[in-house]
Image 1 (tube, rainbow, N blue to C red):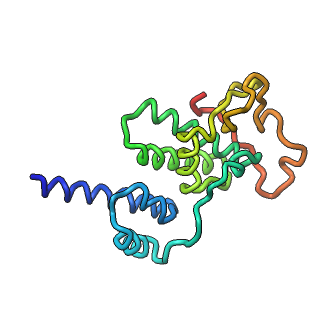
Image 2 (image 1 turned 45 degrees about the horizontal axis):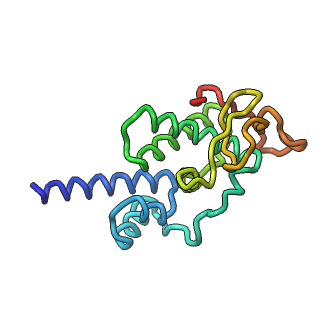
Image 3 (image 1 turned 90 degrees about the horizontal axis):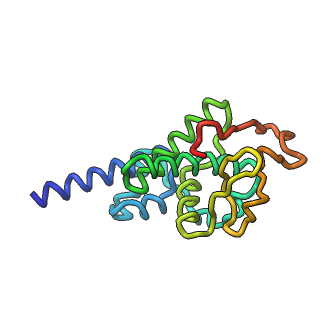
Length: 183
């Protein structure tokens, strides 16, 4: 019976890895979230995506999440993630995967290009888990947005209620609302 369990566990790990690869996850995410060997993951990555994985370091700064449009996208994802965390009993990586899939659906419905990659979404959850980022309620709309933990919550106004002066001037500008997210 133990042998069957290990085969089932390995099958689940492979399925999870394939899903992450199809979503565009970097190899480092797969290594961190599965028990499969580097060599197996590399072969699987090439087989699923038809190419070698990207090289280089993962994004490691919280600053990207603080800029205007990325903050709105990251906040949408994290609201979905936190809702799923409360509403469903799933492994953490499965919550990230499902939240990311729902984030992609929301951006598609809004006709927007998703700014958040699954690797950045995974990293965002790690930053929140480690207390490097948090969610703060906007004092205007009541939505919850990704902020640094030392943000003064009483006076926080989100980028949708108070967009920067040049907001909406670029070709990728669009309005992503937090309606339907877990406020």
